[in-house]
Length: 320
Image (tube, rainbow, N blue to C red; front, side, top):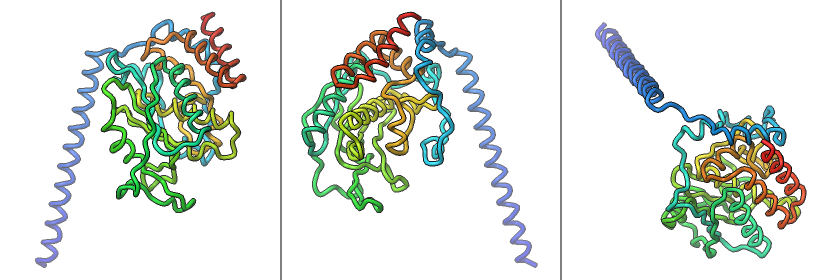
Protein backbone atom coordinates (compact mmCIF):
# COMPACT_ATOMS: atom_id res chain seq x y z
CA UNK A 1 0.00 0.00 0.00
CA UNK A 2 2.79 2.40 0.94
CA UNK A 3 4.61 1.61 -2.32
CA UNK A 4 1.47 2.44 -4.33
CA UNK A 5 0.98 5.69 -2.40
CA UNK A 6 4.64 6.63 -2.98
CA UNK A 7 4.28 5.82 -6.69
CA UNK A 8 1.27 8.12 -7.13
CA UNK A 9 2.94 10.93 -5.16
CA UNK A 10 5.92 10.78 -7.55
CA UNK A 11 3.59 10.86 -10.59
CA UNK A 12 1.72 13.89 -9.22
CA UNK A 13 5.00 15.69 -8.46
CA UNK A 14 6.32 15.12 -12.01
CA UNK A 15 3.02 16.24 -13.54
CA UNK A 16 3.17 19.45 -11.51
CA UNK A 17 6.75 20.08 -12.64
CA UNK A 18 5.82 19.60 -16.32
CA UNK A 19 2.81 21.89 -15.99
CA UNK A 20 5.00 24.53 -14.35
CA UNK A 21 7.61 24.30 -17.13
CA UNK A 22 4.93 24.51 -19.82
CA UNK A 23 3.52 27.62 -18.20
CA UNK A 24 6.97 29.24 -18.06
CA UNK A 25 7.66 28.37 -21.71
CA UNK A 26 4.25 29.73 -22.69
CA UNK A 27 4.90 32.95 -20.76
CA UNK A 28 8.34 33.33 -22.35
CA UNK A 29 6.87 32.71 -25.80
CA UNK A 30 4.12 35.29 -25.23
CA UNK A 31 6.69 37.73 -23.87
CA UNK A 32 8.88 37.23 -26.94
CA UNK A 33 5.90 37.83 -29.21
CA UNK A 34 5.08 41.02 -27.36
CA UNK A 35 8.67 42.22 -27.62
CA UNK A 36 8.74 41.31 -31.32
CA UNK A 37 5.51 43.19 -31.97
CA UNK A 38 6.83 46.18 -30.04
CA UNK A 39 10.05 46.16 -32.08
CA UNK A 40 8.05 46.16 -35.31
CA UNK A 41 5.98 49.10 -34.08
CA UNK A 42 9.07 51.11 -33.12
CA UNK A 43 11.19 50.15 -36.15
CA UNK A 44 9.04 49.76 -39.27
CA UNK A 45 10.53 47.54 -41.96
CA UNK A 46 12.60 49.10 -44.73
CA UNK A 47 11.16 48.73 -48.23
CA UNK A 48 13.02 48.01 -51.45
CA UNK A 49 14.50 51.21 -52.96
CA UNK A 50 12.74 52.10 -56.22
CA UNK A 51 15.86 51.80 -58.42
CA UNK A 52 16.62 48.29 -57.13
CA UNK A 53 12.98 47.26 -57.44
CA UNK A 54 13.16 48.17 -61.14
CA UNK A 55 16.43 46.26 -61.59
CA UNK A 56 15.01 43.18 -59.86
CA UNK A 57 12.08 43.24 -62.25
CA UNK A 58 14.32 43.77 -65.29
CA UNK A 59 16.50 40.68 -64.77
CA UNK A 60 13.82 38.23 -63.65
CA UNK A 61 13.49 36.74 -67.17
CA UNK A 62 17.16 35.61 -67.01
CA UNK A 63 16.61 33.28 -64.03
CA UNK A 64 14.70 30.04 -63.60
CA UNK A 65 12.39 29.80 -60.56
CA UNK A 66 13.50 27.08 -58.14
CA UNK A 67 11.62 23.88 -58.97
CA UNK A 68 10.89 20.88 -56.82
CA UNK A 69 14.10 19.36 -55.49
CA UNK A 70 15.10 15.85 -56.55
CA UNK A 71 15.50 13.37 -53.65
CA UNK A 72 19.27 13.86 -53.39
CA UNK A 73 19.30 17.64 -53.82
CA UNK A 74 19.82 20.32 -51.17
CA UNK A 75 16.24 21.41 -50.56
CA UNK A 76 15.10 17.79 -50.28
CA UNK A 77 17.60 17.38 -47.44
CA UNK A 78 17.39 20.78 -45.74
CA UNK A 79 14.11 22.64 -45.35
CA UNK A 80 14.86 26.36 -45.81
CA UNK A 81 12.54 29.35 -46.07
CA UNK A 82 14.84 31.49 -48.21
CA UNK A 83 15.56 35.18 -47.82
CA UNK A 84 14.05 37.98 -49.89
CA UNK A 85 15.81 41.28 -50.43
CA UNK A 86 13.54 42.97 -47.88
CA UNK A 87 14.19 40.15 -45.39
CA UNK A 88 17.89 40.80 -45.81
CA UNK A 89 17.92 44.56 -45.31
CA UNK A 90 15.71 44.25 -42.22
CA UNK A 91 17.82 41.54 -40.52
CA UNK A 92 20.82 43.69 -39.51
CA UNK A 93 23.23 41.89 -41.87
CA UNK A 94 27.01 41.82 -41.54
CA UNK A 95 28.20 44.46 -44.01
CA UNK A 96 31.49 45.90 -45.25
CA UNK A 97 32.34 49.29 -43.72
CA UNK A 98 34.66 52.16 -44.59
CA UNK A 99 37.23 50.66 -42.20
CA UNK A 100 36.58 47.01 -43.17
CA UNK A 101 36.03 46.70 -46.89
CA UNK A 102 38.76 44.38 -48.23
CA UNK A 103 38.16 40.71 -49.02
CA UNK A 104 41.29 38.67 -48.26
CA UNK A 105 42.00 35.25 -49.78
CA UNK A 106 44.29 32.90 -47.87
CA UNK A 107 45.54 29.88 -49.86
CA UNK A 108 46.23 26.97 -47.47
CA UNK A 109 48.17 23.96 -48.75
CA UNK A 110 50.25 23.15 -51.81
CA UNK A 111 48.77 24.10 -55.18
CA UNK A 112 49.73 23.28 -58.75
CA UNK A 113 49.93 25.97 -61.46
CA UNK A 114 46.38 25.42 -62.71
CA UNK A 115 44.96 25.69 -59.21
CA UNK A 116 46.91 28.87 -58.45
CA UNK A 117 45.78 30.45 -61.73
CA UNK A 118 42.17 29.54 -60.93
CA UNK A 119 42.43 31.09 -57.46
CA UNK A 120 43.75 34.33 -59.00
CA UNK A 121 40.85 34.37 -61.46
CA UNK A 122 38.44 33.76 -58.58
CA UNK A 123 39.90 36.81 -56.81
CA UNK A 124 39.26 38.95 -59.92
CA UNK A 125 35.73 37.61 -60.24
CA UNK A 126 34.95 38.32 -56.59
CA UNK A 127 36.09 41.92 -57.02
CA UNK A 128 33.74 42.40 -59.98
CA UNK A 129 30.94 40.47 -58.25
CA UNK A 130 30.95 42.36 -54.93
CA UNK A 131 32.54 45.72 -55.88
CA UNK A 132 35.11 45.36 -53.09
CA UNK A 133 38.94 45.23 -53.21
CA UNK A 134 40.31 41.67 -53.05
CA UNK A 135 43.83 40.81 -51.86
CA UNK A 136 45.53 37.45 -52.30
CA UNK A 137 47.74 36.54 -49.32
CA UNK A 138 50.92 34.39 -49.45
CA UNK A 139 50.32 30.64 -49.28
CA UNK A 140 50.26 28.82 -45.94
CA UNK A 141 50.47 25.10 -45.21
CA UNK A 142 48.62 23.00 -42.66
CA UNK A 143 50.52 21.89 -39.58
CA UNK A 144 51.68 18.28 -39.87
CA UNK A 145 50.66 16.07 -38.28
CA UNK A 146 47.18 17.57 -38.01
CA UNK A 147 46.17 18.59 -34.47
CA UNK A 148 43.80 16.25 -32.61
CA UNK A 149 40.14 16.44 -33.76
CA UNK A 150 41.05 18.61 -36.77
CA UNK A 151 40.84 15.84 -39.37
CA UNK A 152 39.52 12.38 -40.15
CA UNK A 153 39.69 9.64 -42.77
CA UNK A 154 36.55 9.60 -44.94
CA UNK A 155 34.93 6.18 -44.57
CA UNK A 156 33.89 6.09 -48.24
CA UNK A 157 36.91 7.51 -50.06
CA UNK A 158 39.52 6.56 -47.42
CA UNK A 159 41.03 10.03 -48.02
CA UNK A 160 42.08 12.47 -45.31
CA UNK A 161 39.69 15.38 -44.67
CA UNK A 162 40.11 18.58 -42.66
CA UNK A 163 37.35 19.84 -40.35
CA UNK A 164 36.03 23.24 -41.42
CA UNK A 165 35.66 24.46 -37.82
CA UNK A 166 39.39 23.97 -37.26
CA UNK A 167 40.23 26.10 -40.32
CA UNK A 168 37.74 28.84 -39.39
CA UNK A 169 38.46 29.06 -35.66
CA UNK A 170 42.16 28.22 -35.39
CA UNK A 171 43.72 29.32 -38.69
CA UNK A 172 41.62 32.15 -40.12
CA UNK A 173 39.94 33.91 -37.20
CA UNK A 174 43.19 34.62 -35.25
CA UNK A 175 44.66 36.13 -38.45
CA UNK A 176 41.67 38.22 -39.54
CA UNK A 177 43.12 41.58 -40.74
CA UNK A 178 41.67 44.69 -39.10
CA UNK A 179 40.55 46.09 -42.45
CA UNK A 180 39.00 42.81 -43.63
CA UNK A 181 35.39 42.70 -44.73
CA UNK A 182 36.00 38.95 -45.01
CA UNK A 183 38.85 36.42 -44.92
CA UNK A 184 38.43 33.32 -47.06
CA UNK A 185 40.65 30.26 -47.00
CA UNK A 186 41.21 28.33 -50.24
CA UNK A 187 42.48 24.77 -49.81
CA UNK A 188 43.08 21.63 -51.86
CA UNK A 189 42.16 19.47 -48.85
CA UNK A 190 38.76 17.80 -48.73
CA UNK A 191 36.50 19.35 -46.07
CA UNK A 192 33.85 18.17 -43.61
CA UNK A 193 31.93 20.18 -40.97
CA UNK A 194 30.98 17.35 -38.57
CA UNK A 195 30.49 13.59 -38.45
CA UNK A 196 26.99 13.75 -39.95
CA UNK A 197 28.34 15.06 -43.30
CA UNK A 198 30.24 13.13 -45.95
CA UNK A 199 31.89 16.35 -47.19
CA UNK A 200 31.23 20.01 -47.96
CA UNK A 201 32.56 22.24 -50.74
CA UNK A 202 32.94 25.07 -48.25
CA UNK A 203 31.61 26.71 -45.12
CA UNK A 204 31.45 30.29 -43.82
CA UNK A 205 30.43 32.14 -40.68
CA UNK A 206 27.56 34.63 -40.93
CA UNK A 207 28.96 36.71 -38.05
CA UNK A 208 32.75 36.22 -37.81
CA UNK A 209 33.66 37.16 -41.41
CA UNK A 210 35.71 34.01 -42.07
CA UNK A 211 35.08 31.18 -44.49
CA UNK A 212 36.81 28.31 -46.27
CA UNK A 213 36.27 26.38 -49.48
CA UNK A 214 37.97 23.51 -51.19
CA UNK A 215 39.15 22.77 -54.72
CA UNK A 216 39.44 19.07 -53.87
CA UNK A 217 36.32 17.85 -55.70
CA UNK A 218 35.86 20.62 -58.27
CA UNK A 219 38.14 19.19 -60.98
CA UNK A 220 36.22 15.89 -61.04
CA UNK A 221 35.28 15.05 -64.68
CA UNK A 222 35.81 18.71 -65.58
CA UNK A 223 37.67 20.55 -68.30
CA UNK A 224 39.31 23.91 -67.79
CA UNK A 225 36.12 25.98 -68.17
CA UNK A 226 33.97 23.81 -65.91
CA UNK A 227 36.65 23.69 -63.20
CA UNK A 228 36.86 27.49 -63.33
CA UNK A 229 33.09 28.10 -63.20
CA UNK A 230 32.71 25.65 -60.31
CA UNK A 231 35.42 27.51 -58.42
CA UNK A 232 33.84 30.90 -59.11
CA UNK A 233 30.46 29.64 -57.87
CA UNK A 234 31.82 28.25 -54.59
CA UNK A 235 33.98 31.36 -54.05
CA UNK A 236 31.17 33.93 -54.29
CA UNK A 237 28.66 31.63 -52.57
CA UNK A 238 30.73 31.29 -49.39
CA UNK A 239 31.69 34.98 -49.49
CA UNK A 240 28.02 35.89 -49.76
CA UNK A 241 27.34 33.99 -46.54
CA UNK A 242 29.91 36.15 -44.76
CA UNK A 243 27.76 39.15 -45.67
CA UNK A 244 24.73 37.39 -44.14
CA UNK A 245 23.23 36.34 -47.48
CA UNK A 246 21.32 33.12 -46.82
CA UNK A 247 20.67 30.27 -49.24
CA UNK A 248 18.35 31.27 -52.05
CA UNK A 249 15.23 29.14 -52.50
CA UNK A 250 13.31 31.35 -54.93
CA UNK A 251 15.48 30.99 -58.04
CA UNK A 252 18.25 28.84 -59.46
CA UNK A 253 20.96 31.11 -58.04
CA UNK A 254 24.64 31.01 -57.17
CA UNK A 255 23.50 31.43 -53.54
CA UNK A 256 21.32 28.29 -53.65
CA UNK A 257 22.55 25.35 -51.57
CA UNK A 258 24.04 22.32 -53.34
CA UNK A 259 24.60 18.75 -52.19
CA UNK A 260 26.80 17.55 -55.05
CA UNK A 261 28.59 18.64 -58.22
CA UNK A 262 25.65 17.92 -60.55
CA UNK A 263 23.59 20.36 -58.52
CA UNK A 264 26.44 22.90 -58.46
CA UNK A 265 26.71 22.66 -62.25
CA UNK A 266 22.99 23.49 -62.58
CA UNK A 267 23.43 26.79 -60.77
CA UNK A 268 24.36 29.97 -62.66
CA UNK A 269 27.57 31.86 -61.85
CA UNK A 270 25.49 34.93 -60.99
CA UNK A 271 23.19 36.01 -58.18
CA UNK A 272 19.44 35.98 -58.84
CA UNK A 273 17.42 39.25 -58.90
CA UNK A 274 16.84 39.26 -55.12
CA UNK A 275 20.44 38.38 -54.23
CA UNK A 276 21.83 40.82 -56.81
CA UNK A 277 19.87 43.58 -55.03
CA UNK A 278 21.42 42.56 -51.68
CA UNK A 279 24.92 42.90 -53.13
CA UNK A 280 24.19 46.25 -54.80
CA UNK A 281 22.52 47.62 -51.67
CA UNK A 282 25.34 46.61 -49.32
CA UNK A 283 28.14 48.14 -51.43
CA UNK A 284 26.37 50.92 -53.34
CA UNK A 285 26.97 49.04 -56.60
CA UNK A 286 24.95 50.17 -59.61
CA UNK A 287 23.44 47.04 -61.27
CA UNK A 288 24.31 48.25 -64.78
CA UNK A 289 27.97 48.79 -63.83
CA UNK A 290 28.06 45.45 -62.01
CA UNK A 291 26.90 43.53 -65.07
CA UNK A 292 29.37 45.41 -67.27
CA UNK A 293 32.28 44.55 -64.95
CA UNK A 294 31.24 40.89 -64.79
CA UNK A 295 30.99 40.75 -68.58
CA UNK A 296 34.52 42.17 -68.89
CA UNK A 297 35.88 39.55 -66.51
CA UNK A 298 34.17 36.70 -68.35
CA UNK A 299 35.47 37.88 -71.72
CA UNK A 300 39.04 38.07 -70.40
CA UNK A 301 38.70 34.63 -68.73
CA UNK A 302 37.41 32.98 -71.91
CA UNK A 303 33.83 32.50 -70.64
CA UNK A 304 32.10 33.84 -73.76
CA UNK A 305 28.56 32.58 -73.09
CA UNK A 306 28.65 33.97 -69.56
CA UNK A 307 29.93 37.33 -70.87
CA UNK A 308 27.02 37.48 -73.31
CA UNK A 309 24.48 36.82 -70.53
CA UNK A 310 25.93 39.58 -68.37
CA UNK A 311 25.79 42.04 -71.26
CA UNK A 312 22.14 41.15 -71.85
CA UNK A 313 21.39 41.84 -68.18
CA UNK A 314 23.25 45.15 -68.44
CA UNK A 315 21.03 46.20 -71.35
CA UNK A 316 17.91 45.08 -69.48
CA UNK A 317 18.61 47.11 -66.32
CA UNK A 318 19.71 50.08 -68.43
CA UNK A 319 16.22 50.20 -69.95
CA UNK A 320 14.44 49.89 -66.58
